[in-house]
Amino acid sequence: MNELGEIWVYLAREPLAALTATLLAWLAALRLQAACARHPLANPVLFAVAILAAVLLLAGIDYRSYFEGAQFVHFLLGPATVALAVPLHRQWALVRRSAWVAVLAVVTGGIFAAAVGVAIALALDAAPEVVASLAPRSVTTPVAMGIAERIGGLPSLTAALVIGSGITGAALGPLVLDLVRVRDMRARGLAIGTAAHGIGTARALGVSAAAGAFSGLAMGLNALASALLLPLIWRFLFG
Image (tube, rainbow, N blue to C red; front, side):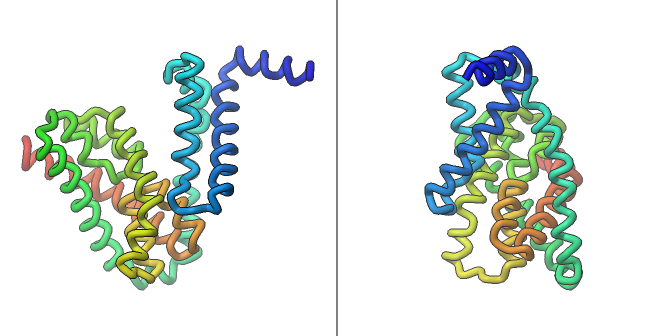
C-alpha cells in the first residue's frame, strides 16, 4: 500500500497523471462495453470521454493542463491512421476491383454529409463560424480542423463535432445499415468510414476485415477529397 501511495504521489506531480487517467478511463470503458454485451450503442469511446470529462470537472482540472500529459496519446493518432493501411493491403485485390465505385461513393457521401450539416445550421440561423465548423464534420479530426480554420470555422468546435459524429456513426451506423438491408461488407465499410471516420473504422474492423479495409479507404479518400474540394466549394458559395 505504501508503494502504491508513492506511485500515486509521483504521478500526481508529473504529466504522466493525465496519461494514466486516460488509459484507466479506456480500460473502464472496455469493461462497461463488455458488461453491455458489446451492444452497438455501448461505444467505449463515448464511455471513456464521459469518464474523463467527469474526472476533470470533479478535480477542477482544465483541459489545457490535462492535454499536456495526454498529448502522447494524441501523437499516436498519426501512427494509428497509417496502420490502417495494413488491412487495406490485405484486401487489396478486393479493393482494386471496386476502386472507381468506391471513389464515387465516398466523394458523393462526403459532399452529402457536409451539405446536410451546413443546411441544418443555416436552417437554425447559426452564426457563420458555426456553419463553417459543421461543414467538415464527417472528416477525420486533424484534417477537419485544418479545413474549418481555412474556411472560417472554429477548429475546436469542429473537433467536438467530428468526435460526436464518429461516436454516433459507430453506434447507430450498423443498426441503420441492417434496417435498410445492406449486407455487402464493402458497402457497409464505405458507408461507416465516410460518415464516422476513425471511430467508425475501429468499429468496422471489429466486425469484418473487408468492412474495416473499405472503411479505412473511405476515411482516407473522404479526408483527401474534402481537403481539396470543400474550400473551393465554400469560396464559390459563400466567398
